[in-house]
Image (cartoon, rainbow, N blue to C red):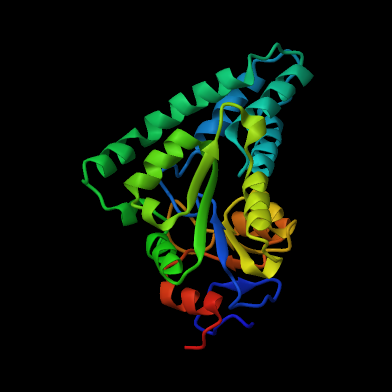
Length: 276
């Protein structure tokens, strides 16, 4: 099915059949929620600070590139995996790493300093949920749900935070299940959620749709022959395509690239296979 002409910023990478979708999986941060916008600006400097303390560290520019590369590759997986990789990189450079969980806790403490005002404003209803969401995302999920497509949410952020932040955005009524990272991290992954949905409901790939801004959920969806939509939102500007995200999502196998969900009605009709 061709992309409608009004989708000026939407890019069809691999044609797919619409009208058969029964289940949809969403990533959370950067796909629906902008509460944690800018998290990379906390994680990368923290990791750089630690690598530059090792005995055999490279120059700062090279070390930053190493960090940015593995943080990007692991985006979408549970945060602990990025911290496990950090510990490995510290060891490679002659350092003695702490437990990955300690790094995760320090990262989250720093991140909360950045976003606590956003959470407070949502809790106190000083700002609208829409102002802290990817444009059009809340309405899109509601309409998808109202059209009979069962929606699930899976995030690499700790589940207790995902549940709270999803509640602040008013998302709970539209999801069959909301899942996030667990302390026992080996017993949770987006792939596990996807595989369970496919197996329990005996789905074929063309009945499963996913939306995400990270490498992991796109690859996991393609592994079950589902249709993967890459959400390449420019999070800081809340407008247009982030070209860096776009490239990563296409490399991961995204079938369609969208900037956001603001063309909600057109998107809904498209995925339902309805001509307007």
